[in-house]
Image (cartoon, rainbow, N blue to C red; front, side, top):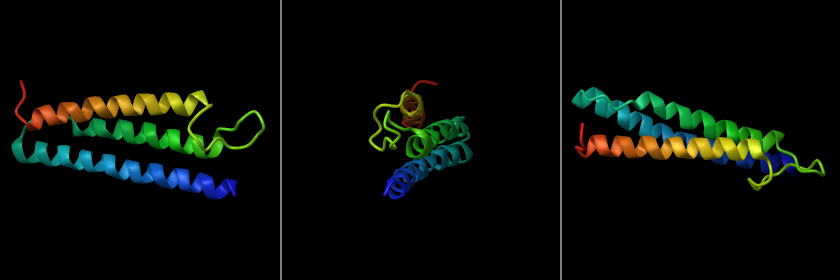
Length: 105
């Protein structure tokens, strides 16, 4: 049963990574179409951080009893990666939004 739970956690983070890659491609399109630097390559950082947190949480984070922690609470490593990945994603998405909506240059 723990294997199924781990695979479901990994599957959900894979879907999240695919959605973030959508922002990557939007930024790439904007830079190619309009010639303004959108720094779309930086969107790969949250993909890597969040996917690494998902893998760590699904397969390597264990509680004091040795059972996997599949509820995103208790292991400091994946929680730190989730915090960093989410923070970077928010900043990059806001930056891309400002760039596309004609914010200050």
